[in-house]
Length: 404
Image 1: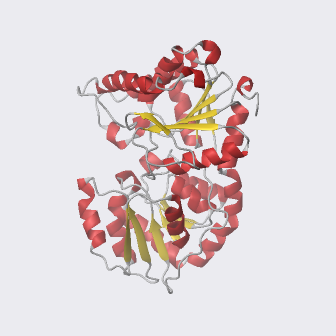
Image 2: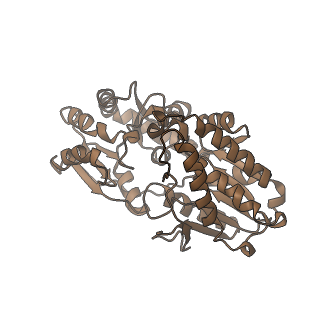
Image 3: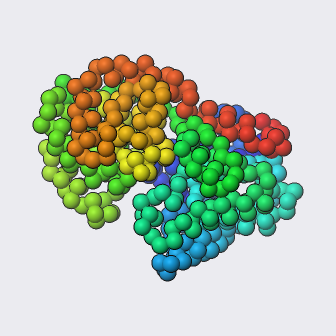
């Protein structure tokens, strides 16, 4: 491979796992001797491994323009793909080669077709190979489910995939759970490669801080109903009345959404010795310090979404040998069974059921910690940035791997 180009419209700052994902990719691919370039959102504020991303993308991938409730999906598909193609056209063609690989780590149907439009304007002899990591099963997302004609999205994904393969037959579609691979294969009508979660936990994680005899429960990630943020007061209140009585660390990444104001106010009102609120997006160093403090990582995730979607927080917690609490019928619960991880599972996605699963984990903490630590090495070897890139590059058409 002559060069890897990472194109991530979600890369802006430390929010979510976008920064970690790109930084780890740069580090791993450079280790293999391959030059890397990164293209990010226009407001990007961070550098990845010393590499400053080129800001070209105009919008968040979830941004919409559709106004008509009947044809909103078509309006979005047409307008957003055109805008994304215009952003891609900012990349000078002379930077590209047929021996390069374009890697898109996070897209939806409203960007997928744009790649076909853009590549169609580049001479065929210069068109790089393409790898698209599909991380969002849009038709299954909560904000889509009740909309009219939402089934159009699956057809638009399929049309975009067919168009992209026509423009560049050396295109690879991939995702990081078998549930997503099966769903996208059925939707696209194209092969979809299942890859590991690309994560690289610290080889020597920071030592956890001492909190007396009280176990520490940590919640990290976006403020989102899909991540069960609204269930935290019920879970915390229940477990705070039990023995052993835990202390909680809760990341509030953003207070912008008014629907979560009551939850944030409740958290703010708790004694600091019981609930520590950490504000804003976290640098990788701060994130790993908090993860290291955890005796238990609480992931009250919605099975309707995380029943097929991966979780970077879960993958890193499991790789570090942490005990995890999750609902049943999630990818995390399935991986917990398969790898023999230290996972306590709630049978239903309710505050009461999750509080019960957390209470059981607290009572049985010693055994679960031994189980989690014993399984961590095997999980780390299977789900890592190294295995991700080894498997992805092995599947990219041989013509692009001239220098690999």
